Image (cartoon, rainbow, N blue to C red; front, side, top):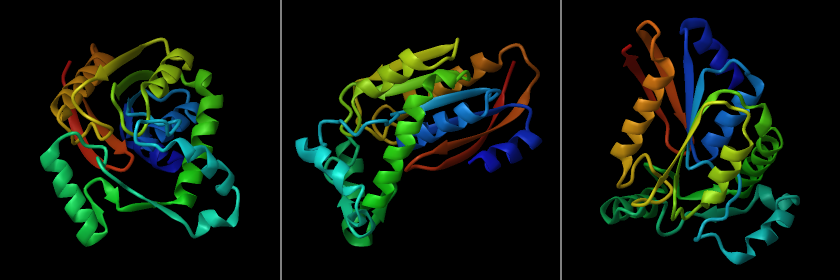
Amino acid sequence: MRECYEQLAATYKYVLVAGLCIGAALALALAVEVPNLTAISLLSVTLNYDGWTIPWYHWILNIAYRTPIRHIYSLKEKHPYGLKNAALRAKVEKSMRTQGDSEIGNASLSMQYIYEAKMLARYVTRNLAAVEADCLIMHVIDDDISSTANAEIVYSKIGASQRRKIFLDDCYHIITMDNERDLVARETQYFLKRRLRGVEVQRIHCRLLGRHILKTRLMIDK
Protein backbone atom coordinates (compact mmCIF):
# COMPACT_ATOMS: atom_id res chain seq x y z
CA MET A 1 0.00 0.00 0.00
CA ARG A 2 2.74 2.46 0.97
CA GLU A 3 4.75 1.48 -2.11
CA CYS A 4 1.71 2.00 -4.35
CA TYR A 5 1.13 5.44 -2.83
CA GLU A 6 4.75 6.46 -3.37
CA GLN A 7 4.53 5.45 -7.03
CA LEU A 8 1.43 7.60 -7.51
CA ALA A 9 2.91 10.50 -5.54
CA ALA A 10 5.94 10.46 -7.84
CA THR A 11 3.65 10.83 -10.86
CA TYR A 12 0.78 13.02 -9.64
CA LYS A 13 0.86 16.25 -7.67
CA TYR A 14 -2.14 15.28 -5.56
CA VAL A 15 -3.12 11.79 -4.37
CA LEU A 16 -6.49 11.22 -2.71
CA VAL A 17 -7.39 7.81 -1.32
CA ALA A 18 -10.86 6.31 -0.89
CA GLY A 19 -11.70 3.00 0.74
CA LEU A 20 -14.80 0.89 1.32
CA CYS A 21 -15.32 -1.25 4.43
CA ILE A 22 -11.95 -2.55 5.64
CA GLY A 23 -10.46 -0.66 2.70
CA ALA A 24 -11.42 2.52 4.57
CA ALA A 25 -9.39 1.27 7.54
CA LEU A 26 -6.53 0.65 5.13
CA ALA A 27 -6.83 4.24 3.87
CA LEU A 28 -6.66 5.44 7.48
CA ALA A 29 -3.55 3.33 8.07
CA LEU A 30 -1.90 4.97 5.07
CA ALA A 31 -2.87 8.41 6.39
CA VAL A 32 -1.19 7.54 9.70
CA GLU A 33 2.06 6.71 7.89
CA VAL A 34 1.89 9.54 5.33
CA PRO A 35 1.24 12.86 7.10
CA ASN A 36 1.16 14.82 3.83
CA LEU A 37 -1.55 12.68 2.21
CA THR A 38 -3.91 15.14 0.51
CA ALA A 39 -7.28 13.68 1.55
CA ILE A 40 -9.14 10.46 2.28
CA SER A 41 -12.73 9.35 1.69
CA LEU A 42 -13.98 6.68 4.09
CA LEU A 43 -16.99 4.70 2.88
CA SER A 44 -18.68 2.39 5.39
CA VAL A 45 -15.52 2.42 7.50
CA THR A 46 -15.24 -0.76 9.54
CA LEU A 47 -13.24 -0.87 12.75
CA ASN A 48 -15.71 -3.14 14.52
CA TYR A 49 -18.01 -5.75 13.02
CA ASP A 50 -21.10 -4.67 14.96
CA GLY A 51 -23.86 -4.32 12.36
CA TRP A 52 -27.32 -5.85 12.79
CA THR A 53 -26.47 -9.04 10.86
CA ILE A 54 -23.49 -9.84 13.08
CA PRO A 55 -24.53 -12.60 15.56
CA TRP A 56 -24.35 -11.90 19.29
CA TYR A 57 -21.84 -14.74 19.75
CA HIS A 58 -19.38 -13.10 17.35
CA TRP A 59 -17.15 -12.21 20.30
CA ILE A 60 -16.38 -15.91 20.75
CA LEU A 61 -14.55 -15.83 17.43
CA ASN A 62 -12.05 -13.43 19.00
CA ILE A 63 -10.70 -16.47 20.84
CA ALA A 64 -10.68 -18.67 17.75
CA TYR A 65 -8.81 -15.99 15.78
CA ARG A 66 -5.81 -16.59 18.03
CA THR A 67 -5.70 -20.33 17.38
CA PRO A 68 -4.73 -22.41 14.31
CA ILE A 69 -8.45 -22.67 13.52
CA ARG A 70 -8.21 -19.34 11.71
CA HIS A 71 -6.15 -21.03 8.97
CA ILE A 72 -8.83 -23.58 8.07
CA TYR A 73 -12.21 -22.00 8.84
CA SER A 74 -14.18 -19.55 6.68
CA LEU A 75 -17.30 -17.48 7.29
CA LYS A 76 -19.93 -17.43 4.57
CA GLU A 77 -21.42 -14.19 3.30
CA LYS A 78 -25.15 -14.12 3.96
CA HIS A 79 -28.35 -12.23 3.28
CA PRO A 80 -28.63 -9.28 2.66
CA TYR A 81 -25.02 -9.21 1.36
CA GLY A 82 -24.63 -5.53 2.20
CA LEU A 83 -27.31 -4.56 -0.33
CA LYS A 84 -30.77 -3.12 0.28
CA ASN A 85 -31.64 -3.11 -3.43
CA ALA A 86 -33.56 -6.36 -3.96
CA ALA A 87 -32.63 -6.76 -7.63
CA LEU A 88 -28.92 -6.28 -7.02
CA ARG A 89 -29.06 -8.54 -3.98
CA ALA A 90 -30.70 -11.35 -5.96
CA LYS A 91 -28.03 -11.05 -8.66
CA VAL A 92 -25.21 -11.19 -6.10
CA GLU A 93 -26.81 -14.09 -4.25
CA LYS A 94 -27.15 -16.12 -7.46
CA SER A 95 -23.57 -15.39 -8.48
CA MET A 96 -22.24 -16.46 -5.09
CA ARG A 97 -24.29 -19.64 -5.16
CA THR A 98 -23.27 -20.67 -8.69
CA GLN A 99 -19.79 -19.22 -9.08
CA GLY A 100 -18.47 -18.79 -5.53
CA ASP A 101 -18.02 -15.05 -5.88
CA SER A 102 -19.75 -11.91 -7.14
CA GLU A 103 -19.30 -8.19 -7.75
CA ILE A 104 -18.93 -7.62 -4.01
CA GLY A 105 -16.36 -10.33 -3.43
CA ASN A 106 -16.08 -14.01 -2.53
CA ALA A 107 -18.92 -16.08 -1.13
CA SER A 108 -16.93 -16.64 2.05
CA LEU A 109 -14.19 -14.92 4.01
CA SER A 110 -11.39 -16.84 5.63
CA MET A 111 -10.98 -16.42 9.36
CA GLN A 112 -7.37 -15.47 8.65
CA TYR A 113 -8.61 -12.53 6.56
CA ILE A 114 -10.95 -11.37 9.31
CA TYR A 115 -8.19 -11.75 11.90
CA GLU A 116 -5.86 -9.55 9.86
CA ALA A 117 -8.66 -7.03 9.34
CA LYS A 118 -9.19 -6.86 13.09
CA MET A 119 -5.48 -6.32 13.69
CA LEU A 120 -5.49 -3.51 11.12
CA ALA A 121 -8.54 -1.93 12.75
CA ARG A 122 -6.87 -2.11 16.17
CA TYR A 123 -3.76 -0.36 14.84
CA VAL A 124 -5.85 2.34 13.17
CA THR A 125 -7.99 2.95 16.26
CA ARG A 126 -4.90 3.48 18.40
CA ASN A 127 -3.47 6.00 15.94
CA LEU A 128 -6.49 8.01 14.76
CA ALA A 129 -5.12 11.23 16.26
CA ALA A 130 -2.19 11.01 13.83
CA VAL A 131 -4.51 11.27 10.80
CA GLU A 132 -4.21 14.83 9.49
CA ALA A 133 -5.47 14.38 5.93
CA ASP A 134 -8.79 16.06 5.12
CA CYS A 135 -11.47 13.45 5.59
CA LEU A 136 -14.90 12.59 4.18
CA ILE A 137 -16.86 9.96 6.11
CA MET A 138 -19.98 8.39 4.58
CA HIS A 139 -21.88 5.72 6.49
CA VAL A 140 -25.26 4.03 6.52
CA ILE A 141 -27.62 4.55 9.46
CA ASP A 142 -28.86 0.97 9.12
CA ASP A 143 -25.55 -0.66 8.19
CA ASP A 144 -25.75 -4.46 8.34
CA ILE A 145 -22.00 -4.96 8.85
CA SER A 146 -20.66 -2.00 10.85
CA SER A 147 -22.79 0.39 12.90
CA THR A 148 -22.58 4.18 12.80
CA ALA A 149 -20.41 3.98 15.92
CA ASN A 150 -17.50 3.25 13.57
CA ALA A 151 -18.00 6.54 11.75
CA GLU A 152 -18.49 8.43 15.01
CA ILE A 153 -15.25 7.07 16.48
CA VAL A 154 -13.26 8.13 13.44
CA TYR A 155 -14.92 11.54 13.21
CA SER A 156 -14.33 12.35 16.87
CA LYS A 157 -10.75 11.09 17.15
CA ILE A 158 -8.94 11.91 13.91
CA GLY A 159 -6.56 14.85 13.92
CA ALA A 160 -7.82 16.31 10.63
CA SER A 161 -8.88 19.96 10.76
CA GLN A 162 -11.19 19.52 7.76
CA ARG A 163 -13.70 16.68 8.06
CA ARG A 164 -17.19 16.01 6.77
CA LYS A 165 -19.63 13.33 7.92
CA ILE A 166 -22.65 12.12 5.92
CA PHE A 167 -25.17 9.49 6.99
CA LEU A 168 -27.26 7.63 4.38
CA ASP A 169 -30.67 6.05 4.98
CA ASP A 170 -31.64 4.08 1.86
CA CYS A 171 -28.92 1.49 1.48
CA TYR A 172 -26.84 -1.04 3.37
CA HIS A 173 -23.11 -1.57 3.71
CA ILE A 174 -22.00 -1.61 0.04
CA ILE A 175 -22.85 2.04 -0.61
CA THR A 176 -20.91 2.14 -3.89
CA MET A 177 -23.41 -0.30 -5.44
CA ASP A 178 -26.65 0.16 -3.53
CA ASN A 179 -29.59 2.55 -3.87
CA GLU A 180 -27.66 5.71 -3.02
CA ARG A 181 -24.57 5.01 -5.14
CA ASP A 182 -25.16 8.15 -7.25
CA LEU A 183 -25.30 10.30 -4.13
CA VAL A 184 -22.10 8.68 -2.88
CA ALA A 185 -20.39 9.49 -6.19
CA ARG A 186 -21.63 13.10 -6.18
CA GLU A 187 -20.61 13.78 -2.60
CA THR A 188 -17.20 12.23 -3.16
CA GLN A 189 -16.65 14.37 -6.26
CA TYR A 190 -17.86 17.46 -4.38
CA PHE A 191 -15.44 16.70 -1.55
CA LEU A 192 -12.51 16.31 -3.94
CA LYS A 193 -13.35 19.49 -5.82
CA ARG A 194 -13.61 21.52 -2.62
CA ARG A 195 -10.31 20.11 -1.42
CA LEU A 196 -8.62 21.19 -4.64
CA ARG A 197 -10.49 24.45 -5.19
CA GLY A 198 -8.21 27.29 -6.18
CA VAL A 199 -5.43 25.10 -7.55
CA GLU A 200 -4.51 24.45 -11.16
CA VAL A 201 -6.29 21.70 -13.07
CA GLN A 202 -4.75 18.38 -12.12
CA ARG A 203 -5.23 14.80 -13.16
CA ILE A 204 -6.04 12.89 -10.00
CA HIS A 205 -5.63 9.16 -9.69
CA CYS A 206 -8.07 7.76 -7.14
CA ARG A 207 -8.24 4.17 -6.03
CA LEU A 208 -11.17 2.81 -4.12
CA LEU A 209 -10.01 0.11 -1.75
CA GLY A 210 -12.06 -2.61 -0.13
CA ARG A 211 -14.18 -5.47 -1.35
CA HIS A 212 -14.98 -3.35 -4.37
CA ILE A 213 -12.04 -2.01 -6.41
CA LEU A 214 -12.46 1.00 -8.63
CA LYS A 215 -9.61 2.60 -10.55
CA THR A 216 -10.44 5.87 -12.20
CA ARG A 217 -8.93 9.18 -13.16
CA LEU A 218 -10.89 12.34 -12.56
CA MET A 219 -10.24 15.73 -14.13
CA ILE A 220 -10.80 18.25 -11.38
CA ASP A 221 -11.70 21.82 -12.44
CA LYS A 222 -10.85 24.95 -10.57
